Length: 515
Ligand code: KIV
Ligand code: ZN
Image 1 (tube, protein in one colour):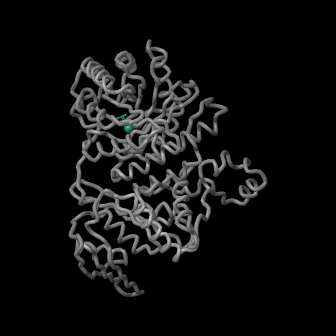
Image 2 (cartoon, rainbow, N blue to C red):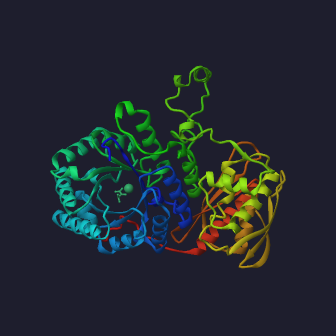
Image 3 (cartoon, rainbow, N blue to C red):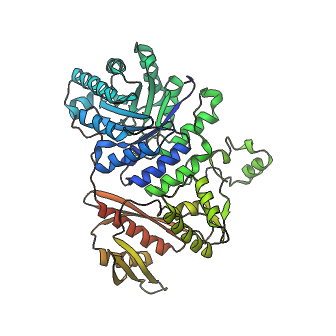
């Protein structure tokens, strides 16, 4: 590999998923993994295999489906974690085990309750164990951003000797400042005698809003892998945003002198996919993928851009997938054209039955809406790509009355395991009345943590995409639904969340202190 290439390691499905409320089903992870592969991400961290049976199945499914990117599972420096990761990755074309242990004084003393020498011993044992099961092993020094440089040199040298081929220096708590983090990388690369036998990687959290700046400073200092997530999703303030890292490297090649293999035209659709699945909206002024990222409001700017784009634009909107947003189909489009367009979007439905069902929904939508865009198709097929949860609750009928000066009222018929039940309820607004009616039947006792509606495309005939986040007993699920009628979309999203809630499951957090 050329020494000028920066490996893009995407951890949306693992560290991104650790963001409260962002947990994803196996099918959702598969859809995102395929979008990442299409974008030519080098390594996809698909999850933490030992965290739960669901995480194991998701890593396994991603490992089996993805051919062009390496697929990685996280594992604490414990035999059981490493064995579970290897098992989940066993059918991967190219699998990687990513094992880690904390190296900062504060973590070693209070979390691990271990002496530094014991931590080195455990790291070496873990890397050797991982190498006995997988050729590609990454070792991370958790909380490296607050670790002592001499200790980092010792443990990293030992991990490379034990067989780690990627060494990751995470700024776990988002504490680093660019010049200081770059200096740490520079010192490690200079002082560790076997540093040339490994790729040095960075993994930055955004607590001070510096995750991207720190990652790029480390690249200048010699790091050649960046760990990042789509839309900067991740714990607390999130991780370094993939789209920002990739576009900074591309736009400032003159200064940084490195490149990535990412096909940047797929950035926007991947961003939208992640946002839709997790229910985490992208702020309008977000770099690269925010709705206003390429919008020029002021007359002076508009005039300049029209005369010569580069006067106010440092990269083209097309280069990250904006304006690819063309009218793709209408009510006269046939089944073959529908299938072909889905394939172009990287969507392959599991079978003919799913294709037929999606095509029927497409025709229904085309009757209501003249222009069907790619985003409409993506929303339309998301049901067919299948949530894991069986449809315990299903919407049969919804009627909502809302009149100025009167209390909104909803009448709902649900099919509960095939048996229809009808109920009516009033509420503060039409959505509230709808949810109250559903709850009168479901009696879930779940707390509604988030309700959000997004127009999928422009215009008042757009489908509304609704996300509903429910919490019960510490378990959080996101339901989604799309329809040109936002009340129907809201009811579908609520029922989807209830069905996911029924599916159950429990996870271990990777940073749990039981090493
Ligand atoms: O932030 C962190 O330290 C991590 C490691 C597990 C790599 O996510
Ligand atoms: Zn992290």
